[in-house]
Length: 375
Image 1 (cartoon, rainbow, N blue to C red):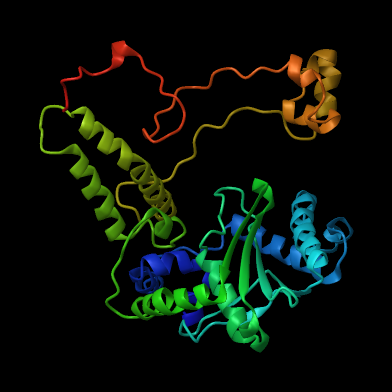
Image 2 (image 1 turned 135 degrees about the vertical axis):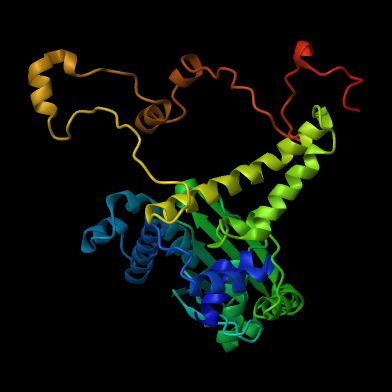
């Protein structure tokens, strides 16, 4: 494994927060205990990035190019267009230079540090560099605020292009079209250089040492390849839960219950990860006491047989339902008067949230503990 792969910008959130994860992943990889991290979602993301880069380089509409690659789909067109429009509108608004997929190095601060930016817009008159990153995923909304990956890309531009040292401002932007999200964060060159010197270089040096500590956390573990096999993460979850339970052997107090609930989200995430890893290992017949089976399938019509079914059932073959509100808005516009007279918002289901949540509390006096209990 190369140093570049170990300390890449895309994994910076992990190795900055949990330096020991670098050595752990290396060790588990050498033992053949980690699965290939190329998932179907990752492959889709790679294809979307290639599509977006081609659109920007050729300066054409995505619909014109979509059929030129088997990896690009019609579903991608709208999202790639939203990303490309943002980048090109920015270029036009400041009369700037566009650099697509710039390969940059930041080994001045991180040994072997290098990466590839999705897009960089160079505003010479405004002495500003815009670093723009496409996030094609639709699971977790990603913020540009203090985003380590984008700041390392900015560092790469600062080191790789001599003119960048004369620029005052770096604007970092994440475009996540499938979440309808554009997030932006601005910092000065001095702020960037201070972060690189004070935070990144010491963390990178520690991460490449043989005794770097494992420091599990929600953000560090989320995309870590070793998250299911990391004993430090297991210990952190179990210890936190034991601490929440306290020493009482008979019943949990409301305070202890609140502590356990606070830990439950991390615990559930960890349990989900270890179950998924157990499934992978069990498929190879190597998980003691467990095997993988198939759940009972549900009957369905064979795809492509709609005409035969319709010929047999006639009009009863189909059901008509109202279109969704979202579909109706697309057809007649969100400002149509029908939405003020024919739409209602019923009360949502009850949900347990932290007391800091801004929504008003729902209180049922009959279900509340006595005020004297659990104090």
